[in-house]
Length: 277
Image 1 (tube, rainbow, N blue to C red):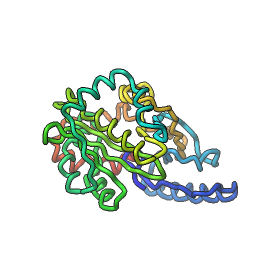
Image 2: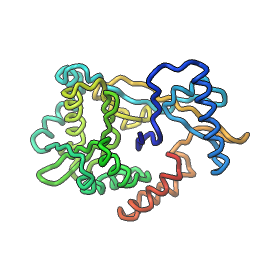
Image 3: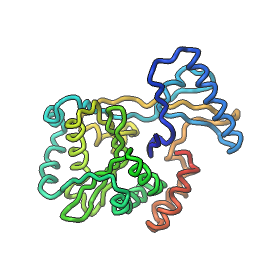
Image 4: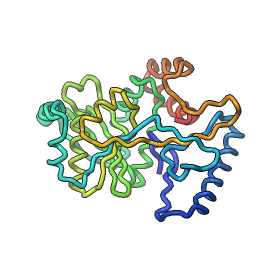
């Protein structure tokens, strides 16, 4: 199952693996990574959240990011009581002007793709192609939530639900509508939905410790869990760990921050596909 934050296949064996089975699986994965690295001249390979790689030969573990998880097996009212007081104040304002709708229509996603592009441009990050989201919606895997002020979309949240967990995969909003708190309204509405559907957890997805996004997500009361990364380096001078703040990304980020939205939508997915993030 592809994720925008953690692209790739989600390996879920279901049953516990023996050490022999685990070693065999990781040896096959390593061979595939090595072959691909040979073709692309990669400095290193990165597996995110791959617990099966823990202790595997040739892999180095690091935990540069974490995720925040809400226990939605508890009643919504109990969760809301633990929200930060500022969230409660902002939600009271948002409830007066913001409405939230859910859809699985690819056509509806096209209405809000520009909101997502605008936020990625603000971050200086290459976006995913609209087709990434549309195909997930067409397959019944994705859910799209749209927050509107009046009749106009002001924010979007794209989610995946798998194995009893609600993954708040991508969210974006219009800066001009921030005073109405549509993104906060989206999180609250989908947390309420996760509780109503009997899901066991709500995952706010990857965040960098100490960042502004991390500080905001903490206000919802979720517990923090580290995301283990497993690196396999190639070459004596290779350094594992891609930091988006590195100076060598300054020019691409400048391009992303200034590109017209149509160009960003066309060029950004190509850059993202080859950047490995």
